[in-house]
Length: 362
Image (cartoon, rainbow, N blue to C red; front, side, top):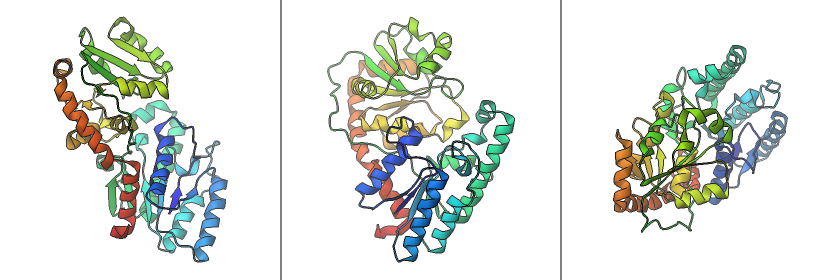
């Protein structure tokens, strides 16, 4: 199969947009596919596309092409953000289509259609970028057989919609970690949150207020230092003896997951959260940690439909206190999370892609 992405593949990536393609490639390889990669700068992709098209003309067979979009428009992904190779990627798709090779594409995000994006960039940059985001969608309509989204709810937020006949959910996947720490016999409740903390998208006020003053609840927040510094006066977390703030990654994150009883995805509602499926949700499942989620979000839908935690409508503090006092409730959900990992591995995601593009034969 062909794996296409209009960006570099970075083995040291720390963001979800950099980690996900690497995990998907490993998923395809584990599923038994030989993966031909098209990535890098536009000129590097152009050379690789020509190489693959020549192979096809000489009889090489490819079952399908799977592509992942960048967070930027396809034609603007080089460092200079200029469309100097406008026909490389979609010209490649056109050739694959001509040779009857199915194309699936994971459309990562539609952040550019929200007011949050308008506020984060200048008007000139936004108008320029949005033109190319819309151009991407027009090209997808022409060439893509199956469109994959983080959640199906994202479809209604794509400006103008899509004409692609097959649209499927393809959230991130899970790892299977053998060393899962036993959580029985503890007192109190260790709550973990990892991610952004800035308003309006990551307003953690409901979570902070839920644990404030409750001695049985211990909250660990892992976030970027610059975000903490900018929100320090707003949250006033440093004044709470049962709240710890950590800046870091790697082993710190692993140990925090192992010590956590639950992961809390409790924050002020934003329209964007209706379809967003954070990478951290599946990392949490990988570590066998149940999730407590606020309602009305794609995360809540996934938690509820898979039985991997609780969706709490209100009185978050009282609910967390209830879990602290009845650990059997946590253990029941934890066992379910451990089972659900196997249905949500990266290999399972890769096989799902193959089935959508090639049918039951894969």
